[in-house]
Length: 197
Image (cartoon, rainbow, N blue to C red; front, side, top):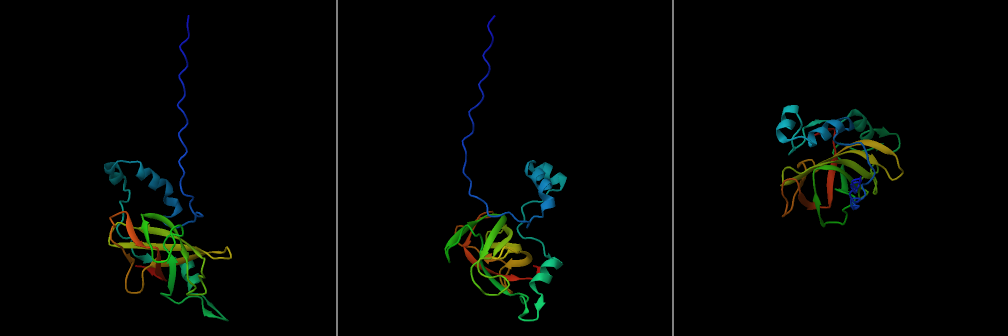
């Protein structure tokens, strides 16, 4: 009696090279949401709605900046005065992987690591990495919040840096933008806030 040949196992999937992410950091969304959001991602739209999963946000909700970040950013010291003033400007690349002054970058919703490119204030010197989250649901404006900084000396500190300035929230997008994928200059500005707008 002949034995049936054993089935061949499929060939290994080809390795797909992904760009290396920058150092992971807690940011937005909070780590405790991870499992819930992964569950939501695997559901149909109807099931996700029934479970209460969040939809794509066009704009994040206004909220107070965490106390730890406010204390660190706006602390006083005896020699130099206030570490940062409220609404202090911070010049940074939206995404440290896309950095060349003035040239366009393409950005999508999700976690991001920015990089300070100008010594505008002593608290966040040039080379500081900013960990945050981007929202691109409104194709006309890129919104971003950065919640942690890694200083050039390696120290990690909580921050509330919001893309935009005192008058305008976010950064106006360029031609070719669409909801979920926007084109914006790579080097932008933000401000140190007490409350997310």
